[in-house]
Amino acid sequence: MERKGISTVVAAALIVVIALGLTSTAYIWGAPLIQKRQEASTTENVFNLFSQTNQNSLPEIIEDVASNRGVKTFGVNGNGVWKLNVAENSIEYLFSSKTSNVAADTVNPVSLTPGVQCTGTSPYLESPSPSTGTLGQDSSSVVCVKATTQGDTFAIRYKIWFREVDDNPFSPTQGYQIILEKDPTGLVTSTGSIVKITYDDTAQQTIGGKTLITKKIKILLI
Image 1: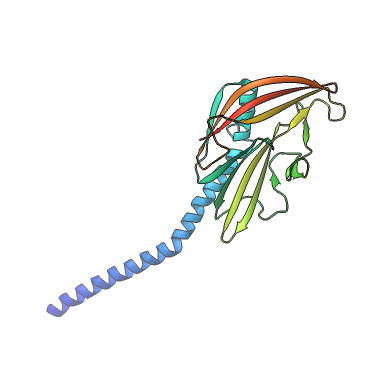
Image 2: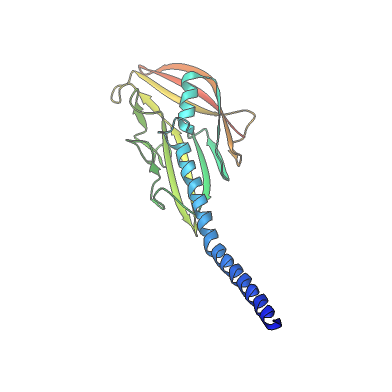
């Protein structure tokens, strides 16, 4: 009876050891896969937040504020860096991920805007090409995304440019453009998750027979 009791205890201990071993093995192999799936989900969410097919994306929100005035906020879940470049009239978001849903290490950024490439060299490198669009047909915003391999991760950068759109690409008489401005209380770079978009002013000027309407939008990186 005593030997039988000892055997039972030993068997139970072996079962516990084997179970712990299997659990550890499953964790060692499964944890990276779970993490990769989580990062893939984050990468896809960020993609949607910059896609112009999504009405709640950043480029669409900025264009909506320019058209209808008011104030709106935009948020992204993730650890990234915002950069506002008023000289380029652009805003970008850079983050790292173990997954990428766009082609990596391309010579030029990938354009998410139909009919536009991110291959311009003037006035700025990787700017929209063509540099102007057609009023009523093309969007003022152009979204470019670039994924760069860095070891076992990708550095992914979304950049939104705002270009002029004209009524006639060959002999324009009227043009329209959104102008990004830095909010006086904000910064040009931020690791925060919130962007506040505020309508500021509308201006109109005639140059060489063309009337250009500009909508000024203040960007506050929080």
